Image 1 (tube, one colour):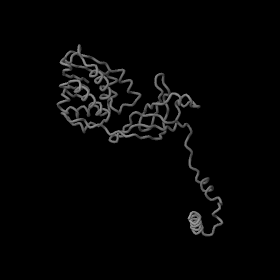
Image 2: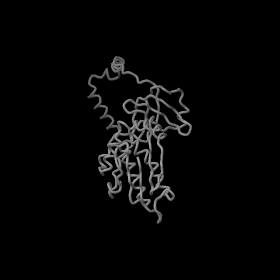
Image 3: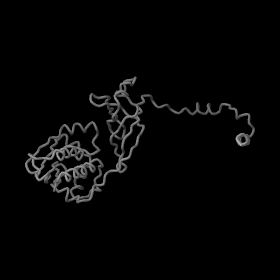
Image 4: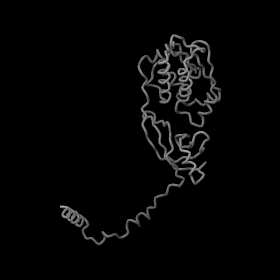
Length: 268
């Protein structure tokens, strides 16, 4: 993938020797999001990031991102190529990955703010020749994904726990893959049982894209290693069939009405 932007900041044209720092940060930050989107499993995301190689070439801001064959193969089955094709002809609504759509919008907004007059984008993997993203998107702002706060109780397998710089928990969830949920170091340190590689009931908070159902910014609330109890029908029936104070009342409805009347009289 390549980003090639022309523009002028404070009377100085974009170039490798004079590149606005915030513009460079925008490119470096958003390219991985555009490439990976939301569908790459967390266990693979670090592999792809580590495999990325950046080249800065002459000619305005011209940054190329190269992936190894093995890393590029991880994009198979994602909507990257399809989304890039939609972007190249200005069909923003057809971009299926919400994270990718937001990253494209953030990149365009930041480069325009820095004085960009054109933003050329191309992808050899997606077989998309360079197109001017500003021309294709026009002045209309990109529609951002609708994210809402949510939480769920999910059965998950813990594949990693803790961390040197950040306290987090890797949860392998059937049907969703592995997510990395932020946690609190003190909470993890106070766990009385080693839960690594064990199935747990995890309470996770996150933001969910209402259009795609994708989760983002997962945060661990609690872990419960106890197995869910099965419902014992016979024990339930035995419990509800025990005699109570109402068994000796001939007409429970009439008695309730009498008690209500007594309460009214008492408070009148």
